[in-house]
Length: 477
Image (cartoon, rainbow, N blue to C red; front, side, top):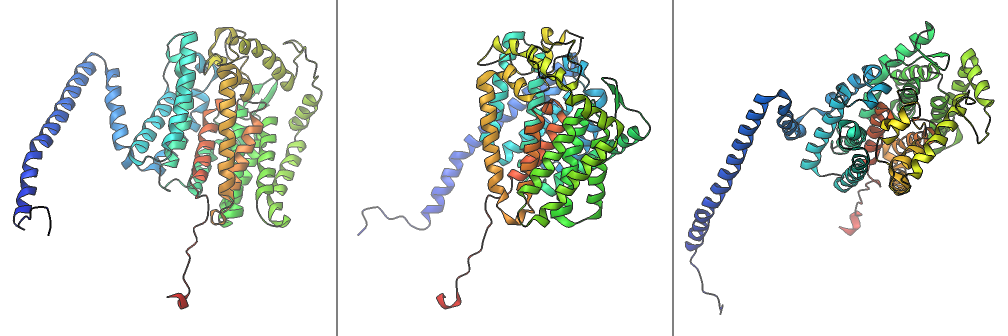
């Protein structure tokens, strides 16, 4: 016999109704409180906007975060990337790196951060990775502020790097809408007009004058940044042709972007393109005949570059660079020699803060570094040196550890056979960036950072192992 008193069937609903009546005032009070807070916030925002239109920014930011989940991500990301590439030459000049003004590039960076924040709050995918990136950027932006003071100049680099991380978070939280096929197509479409313009500049002897050489830059601020984006797009086009669908349009785009890479006459960009092709060919599973496609493109690219008078002249000039450790500004008469000189001048800056550095952006905003010609005369042209100066040995060690973890994660995705060798393609892009970072400002070019973030995040969204449905034999039924 039960020790608990029995209840009639009719009493249970009455108890539930009584509990509901008791909970209604609490729910009503919570709703009233939230409504009151919202009304007060809107009133305060209205008073602030009446004083200056700039105070409308917090409300706009909150609205973007709130509706981020409902935005059409594919056309939105594609259109923003097109605008960013087509305006890069006017928005990303070296003079703008020392300016505290907020231009279109800053607005785009902020927009990426807000959209990714809204998606992250709702979908919660990759939260700890995003939090780790945010903490890293916040700490070394704080170091910059503590050493140089709070201003839009000192936080500019932190916002820019946060926007690159935000693009990765956005793609990772898109729930497959921005998969590897889609993001590579966006990269192609966004950069094709710029690539055609670069080829036109080469054919008509136009472009920008760099160290006495006329080089194509398309719509980008510098031929080096243009060559890096074109190399990524060319490798993506080749991957799409070889592993996704053998579409003739992808083969044509691979040729256009490869030609645009050559037209910039960037030795670093050309070498990076070759590294991407060779790594991609080596990592593709199968016999040699399957790998030969990327090797053939690499060989033809080198032949085409050497066939141009400026290409052969640049290689001849750089090969004559002296490796003397006492390179000075006067004796640095080649691009490689100039880089040796820049690295020498940055070492004393690193010695001022060997463990935690000078803060993000210090190598492009510090007066002592930028004062030589009023622009970015001593920009590192080496991402490892840049992070060493800006974040010290601690920050550089964290960056290298993160790269190793990323590489290991992509290797696991490479072993999944249903992904059209997407892991191998992403590894080739990362390998090219690591190589390019030895002698160029790889991620100081935001367009390069956005393209790489899209590819890596989409590849990282690939499942680590194939899903196999195990069927029980009929005899076991």
